[in-house]
Length: 137
Image (cartoon, rainbow, N blue to C red):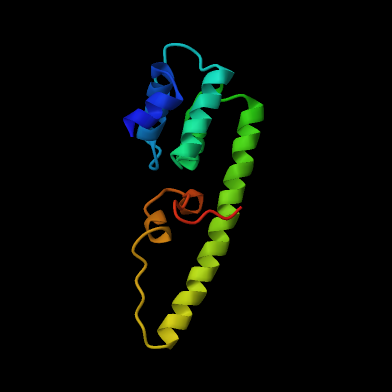
């Protein structure tokens, strides 16, 4: 994973990215930086978050940042739109999963969801988890 980060951004941005991930799905910790994050830096962080499917994890940490640490408003708006799309996709997926579960149990089967949406329940905001196998936008 380190090599992927290294190819997408410089060391300073890697550190910010990794700090935001450490704050992570549970929302604990603070971002410790020595200098402001530029618009270009935030664009790199956004690209890496998108590539690594952790855009939601980073986005949900914005409430823990100071105003001066936040990405530019235009990027926040773009990020918000993608998060809303993820929420809608997850709602559709969960509706289908519930229907399939009902159909299987009516046939006498006992289905178990072992990954994907089943893992989302471990997140602070399960509706923001991006499923790596199925992306519908």
